Length: 338
Image (tube, rainbow, N blue to C red):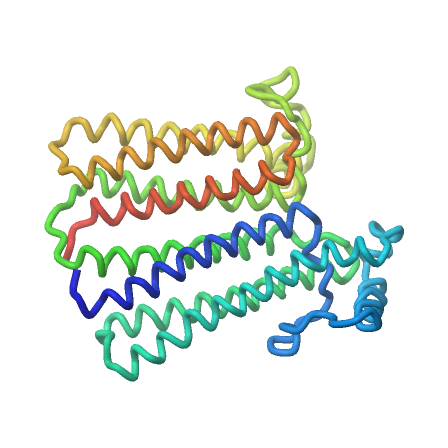
């Protein structure tokens, strides 16, 4: 690790922690049904919440003009509206703060010529990913302001996975600065880690589908779906593929089965690694995968059995975040340094 890179590493680490916090707040926002409480998007003026009773009344009246109030929350009082407004407001405010944390130090690093040409390009891509996330978030919210008082689960999945990928890329850049002269690798374990990362991304997408469709609140039994390994509702829709992108039972079924695939892959990687002489940090990467997947599987089962209470739903999302971080770390550790 080069001394001049320490401020950049701290900056990237701060970005990782803030994105982690953003995902937690986003999970709470989704699980509390708060995401459609702010029905417009103003990049600068939207940072200021209602400051007095009259402004709160105006915001509430504006909310009443949209499907969520008209079809679901028509009995809401002003205090109840304030409760859901709070989480969406915090979510958006945190997004603005993250933007400033990424942009201002980046400009300072450019002025001081701290970054190499390669790192400038990488950080520029990171900023584009972060900026796109804000627009994707509003594009997602807009889907719930037209006819259906729920956001599109497809747009929710895109919003979530771009946040996870932004975190993953930030972590990757940070690791490349912490270990610039890494002279160890393992091609077989790298390839397995890459397969794991791809499957895990698909699993996270299906986790977003489950959240967007509230599919975690059906078939709250394990290991079977009520009395069957494959519930009849899993293949009830026609054509068949519709079940696995729009059907509650089908989406939950895929999410269940992919969990076994992720677990099986990591167990295979764990035992496959025993055939190699690994250095300590490589063994740590393998152990971290096993610990995080064990935690996530346990959280997933408990969350399902308890019908997805808010705190467990958030904990399960945090588990996914940690597992993704562990898989990125594993991929980096086993990658050949070119």
